[in-house]
Length: 114
Length: 115
Image 1 (cartoon, each protein chain N blue to C red):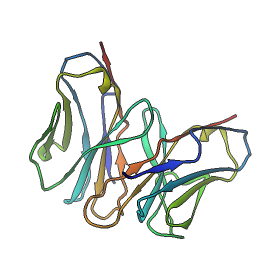
Image 2: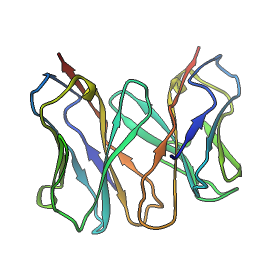
Image 3: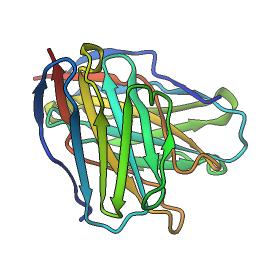
Image 4: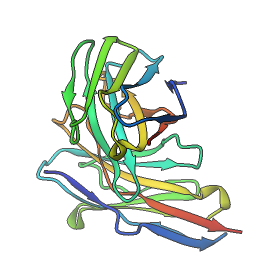
């Protein structure tokens, strides 16, 4: 079974703090993704990575950065958290092999910035 | 640009009713993939189905069925004889062949099945 884990289910941070959200997958997937989920807006892609040390901007990268030093780990960084970054953050991974294309999701981190 | 629209933000039904969740998509690509995911209260998205643009055959899996109509750019999802455990948020998503496995999601439909 594919397993995608995220470091925290709930997180509360103050405005201006630096925030790290960690994601780990155990299926040797090449692709990893960070989304944020807001009511009525569905999931929006922040960044994705198709290989170690590679990253691509998604639809809403402003205010975020990412790091992928190892294949299994993809970190999302909020350099200076703001209240409008209060949201649910979901990590996903998928394989580049074959034609499956299915993305496997972690349980999410609900971040509150006060 | 790609877009996925789920016009129904919330649907409430009574157990054993049939319910259809609508999904309309926009893309300029001729090769693309459509997905449905379920998000139960626990939060983790669960993959339900993937369809490619060349396969318009409808699919049935137990109480779930999907109707793909390329002519109307729709990929609707029907639950027959709904159960309380079907209560969740359902997302429709689109991936084009050249997007590096990136998904474009609709806004989601919250389904509430009452006993």
